[in-house]
Picture 1 (cartoon, rainbow, N blue to C red):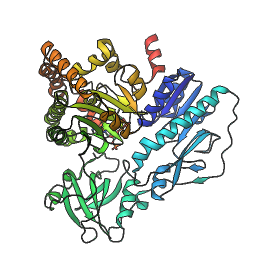
Picture 2 (spheres, rainbow, N blue to C red; picture 1 turned 90 degrees about the vertical axis):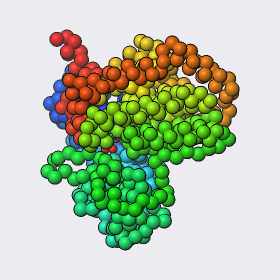
Picture 3 (cartoon, protein in one colour; picture 1 turned 90 degrees about the horizontal axis):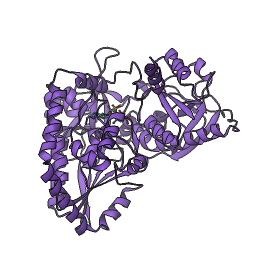
Picture 4 (cartoon, protein in one colour; picture 1 turned 30 degrees about the horizontal axis):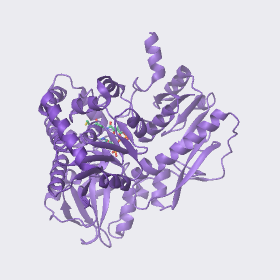
Length: 551
Ligand code: COA
């Protein structure tokens, strides 16, 4: 079928559905929901059999749903209606939640039901984490069911059952009262608003939105006081304990202004530096565990973004695990993201974004090199969450590359202002998919699903659970694999040294960072400030490509 996605952006859920539907042979095109006329023009150009709205922030125009069957993916269970579905679910601590696919009509979220799925709501998860994991999995199941029913041509969707309209969850409903709110309440409020919009609060005299909260079990102080710092995070006392806050965003001075989400350390400045350093009791940014000679390295960085310090810490920890005698190291990343490459927000906030970009890439390359050159250690990348840009190539530095079923990879850099890319991709990618394959992967700019990535040889396989990878790691014929690795590395090094690949890539990156063409700086600014799209790029809007080709 020809399916048009009408969506606010090509976000992770939309990408996953794109991957699933194209792999089933459907012809897809994408239009960003910018204004009614543009959406209708897109549908008229593409003449889709079906329109799907995976992620919309407003109603589908009447002229679209009255001419085409439009299915809307709603991140709420049967009967749930309204724009803040998941925020309410976390706020009200629902036990179960769900996803419903309904047909657009004149009533927002009120059309006939095509499919719905329920799932248990993971306690302690942020809204964004639920969206990326449970909601995405349920949305795939529901959408595929609805598409199949639509293709079957005989399904008559059931009218909506009575349900609840929940209004937009406003900041005044999210307010934290530090004098009376207990740790669990504070955590719940922040998690219900994380990654967007955050909970508006005041910290050290600044109006800030809060994100990335973790419980503290031993430290305490007068409710509301800032009591400690660790790394980039600040600890604040609640009525019965304390919480750590890792990220914040200053409220822009002007209405409609755009702030950047940053580590608390940078947002609070002097007030942060004045706090005593303390060890958190419940969380770490990077840690490793060892079982039967297998070291598992975890690095659940917020949003998968890896700043210069993060890369250095990772490299040091990796070397520590190896020095500790681990013959196999599993790089596990985090549950929500494996890695999205260098930290563009930190780069934006630096005095010289060009210098910080360079420092971040060098640190990322150093970590990649440590993995590639670890001759006595077999390294397995186990991508539990999505990866983008340099994050994908970081995984390819490992000897064996696996991704969890359902993970979506974006193995390309060009969307960030034509960035050339580093992380030894010119060495690692052709070795896996050949030269032509590398050109295709880099220039298509489209997401690739885990199983498709395994089919084309970009990765070695998929897994459903980290324990599966740990079992594999324990059962490997290590001697043989390590011998092969050493021989291959020596051969490759003789043919062209690793340092030469790095130098060539960095030469191009220097041009991106310091050269005459500012595309990377503009694209990064737009990305971190979340500037809405003014048009859909042609690599997504196939219907517009045809018009251009005819012209
Ligand atoms: N640095 C800082 N923040 C990043 C980031 C990065 N490299 N990559 C993603 N993020 C943040 C996003 O700003 C967003 O933040 P929010 O929580 O404030 O909304 C969050 O991570 C999720 O990203 P989003 O773009 O909404 O996720 P997605 O699944 O829809 O898209 C990507 C995934 C990878 C396609 C997209 O995030 C991307 O293009 N990232 C940039 C990759 C890149 O160019 N890295 C630099 C070169 S190595």
